[in-house]
Length: 215
Image (cartoon, rainbow, N blue to C red):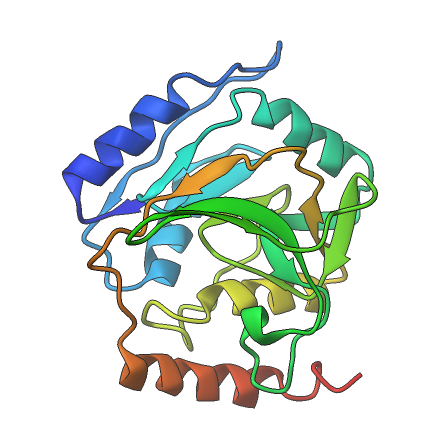
């Protein structure tokens, strides 16, 4: 977990400490402080952990489903080609590359901005719905692929990029079925997007993956 806010980090860890761990598994936390980018933080964390299954979590995400590890393992076990899982995503990316502008979106999460919101896209009908990209607030993998630190050296589009990298490596990306949201994303009232920076990385994403988006 990348963090620059001890209060949020501690609350996230408190929720993680409540989860039920499947028999035969252990959970180790890797904390990365003051990273220059999300990709730098996640590459560092990936190198520090020998775990087969890795979960990349924002510091403002609080796990609500105490049994989510069982659900996650079920999703990965259902298909060895499933490399990466998120909790909300786009079945097919639009020309903008922005996942939430897609025609078909799946998954669910509880968000807290000014108020709490139940964000509920299309229901996942099977164990997993296969998608082109997921939101980066929660990403789980069962294989290690380098995050594109060489291109996405900031805080935007690292998630969609990683989905494309898994696709290029021959793996699938998916969103698991959630009967109720697994997470609360506590964005808070001060959440904002640096539009100039966002546009910069959007253009980088479109340039880097333009050919694989033509379907």
